[in-house]
Length: 105
Image 1 (tube, rainbow, N blue to C red):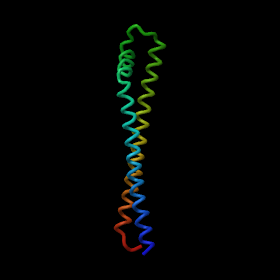
Image 2 (cartoon, one colour):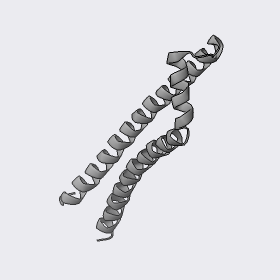
Image 3 (cartoon, rainbow, N blue to C red):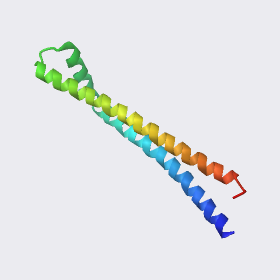
Image 4 (cartoon, rainbow, N blue to C red):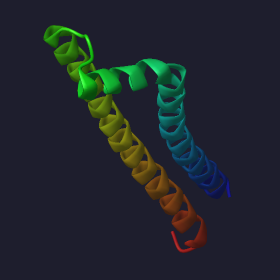
């Protein structure tokens, strides 16, 4: 009886950790999006300066292009992190549910 109680507690903890992994990945994406919205005027100005090159030195345009590419790389990394968090969380939740249905252990 005590072994079954410990098993249920472990499966519940596994399910909770899986949900937490998904939530943490989602929070990191939301936090990055909020940062981009806080700096959206700067990003829009940066993009317009890259394409129009209106009265800006080439060195400044190249620095802003590097900054924009860096933002894109960070976004791609966040998508990768969220994908991994989602995969790990779904696998943990599936394993916890599979363990709860199996009664012959």
